[in-house]
Amino acid sequence: MDRRHLLMTAGAALAATTLTAHAGEHHHDHAASPLLASATHCVETANVCLAHCLDRLADGDKDMANCARSVTGLIAVCNALAVLAAQHSPLLPRYATVAADVCKACETECNKHSEHPPCHACAEACKACAAECAKIAA
Image 1 (cartoon, rainbow, N blue to C red):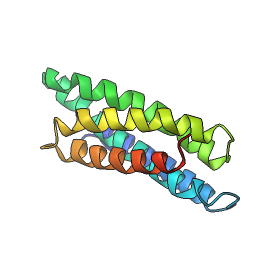
Image 2: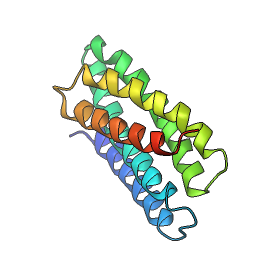
Image 3: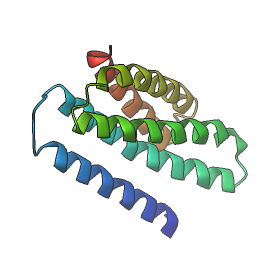
Image 4: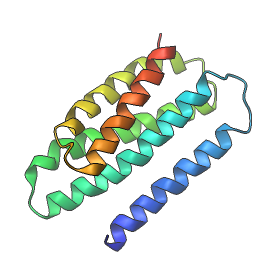
């Protein structure tokens, strides 16, 4: 594992741990807690998947470009989802509808590369997050 990959993975893990730790401090809405954990896990696995995609792209594997694009969008959406869940936002159910669609699209793209463990893990996290979103989606 090169230093860049290690730093990206460590940073993602630290962010996920911090969000998860803060999520457990105040439980006003118990439905948001599983969604927060799922969104955070999704971001963590997506960051690892993105690092893998970038490494493969650097090696000339252009088949990973769509996966990298999909995962990049997923990271943005699930980061926002985690923030809204942590804040118990009244907008969360509507946002969860969109987030579920993004998670399903990323799952589909990552499944095209499921022979790569980071892509497989990301697809599984996306599937789980989409299911959590569906539980509260408007």
